[in-house]
Length: 158
Image (cartoon, rainbow, N blue to C red; front, side):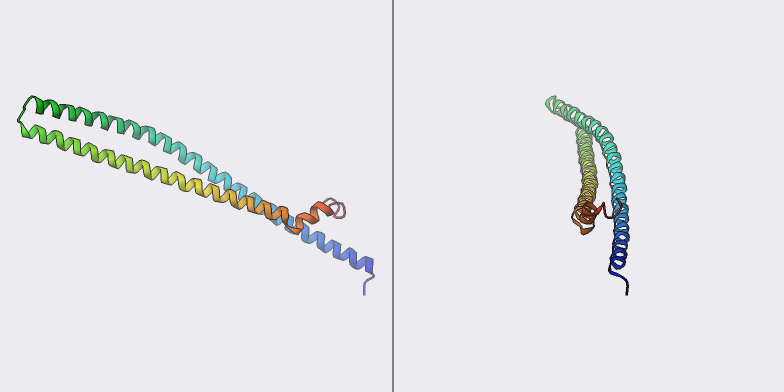
């Protein structure tokens, strides 16, 4: 049997080796989560930029559609007030107005879809942040953390 000091020294060496391995694993997990969060953040930024550009474009399209609808409505009212009985022209203006309303509905639906995609990316980032915080809390509250904090001198500063 090994003398007690040698056995204790061997146990300390094994514990230091296990601590070093766990510390390496925590570091690798933390780095992986950080890379994932950075990637998700870049994706979210790109999506937000694209969405903002798209929204600006769609806002212009909506404004033009609304202006055209108002112009058509004004034309229709003027034609009716002038007692223009040309039903073909009235139907044409009404068809145009209906088409513009359909385009407005389609553009609003596309805006809603873009907003839903942004919320999905934000949710992914939030989940990654929660996971990173859990990992940090687990690391801070683990026995390995306590050993590292309290036993750094005995472990040679490792």
